[in-house]
Length: 243
Length: 152
Image 1 (cartoon, chains in turn brown, yellow):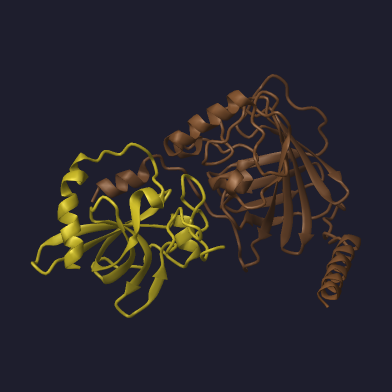
Image 2 (tube, rainbow over the protein chains, first blue to last red):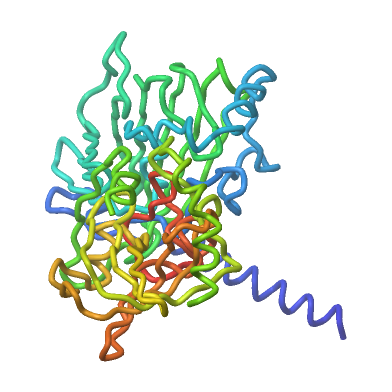
């Protein structure tokens, strides 16, 4: 009886999986025929607290641990000791990639034939993802790097390089060097959901590439828009002291 | 209410000694989740600032002594999405702020809701606090930006 039930459940699960695999969601198209990723998107969890503790976020390696080289692991532990004071975000610096997409702040995607732009509510950041450029800028680092995009079927693949070594991945002190290279993948999975994946490579800090996966949710409220979030260093301390 | 003031007195010395050392502290560092509190007073003003806004209100104790309280709330973008506007509260109007007391015993609290005299409840911050499981846990340093309904 038990075995029969299990088999039936297994068969049902398999058929659901097979059906899902057979018919992936087909994203609507922009006027020039690109899969349409436009809209206001946001993570619904707070993976930024600690990537390793965010359930199911790190999908590779299987153990969910960031594959630090020994010296880098020691540095991460050092960072985590006084992370609130050391986190570059708390000093109003730009978050870098992929952290910018994992903050609990919405961002809006706009598409043109040559370029995809993302406007972020979080301290008015923006990113330009160039679809027709083939080479990254050379011998320069930026907080948000340089993003080159191309389509792999319905997935937008973004190669991010030229990132500096000043940002952290999360509040827990996870960090990287200026050898950081990020490959992002954006795939619409439904009318209001998008899969966000990022493969992180940095031979100075990690023994192997590692990968995160998170779902972005579209803001479906009427009149949805991004607002403003400015970073005001010590503003709340000042407000508290002013009384 | 009386109990609050006892805590307040005990923390007065600490308050003087405390100096701002960083832009933001997590909910867990600042507030005591085992000390839910409801404080009634008269609205003074709002500071619409990031990473968190502050509600200033004055509380008159049983002995007639007036204490100026501050309640930490969602940032401006989060409050806006919850329906708050600059003219939502009028100076001098009676409000009851519910939330959690500061660990240091000062007249500072985390606000979850503000209730007006007519019973209108305004959501001001997650009951879990900025660092809590359903709270504004995002950036920077815990200031969840969009301030939506409690999540997870």
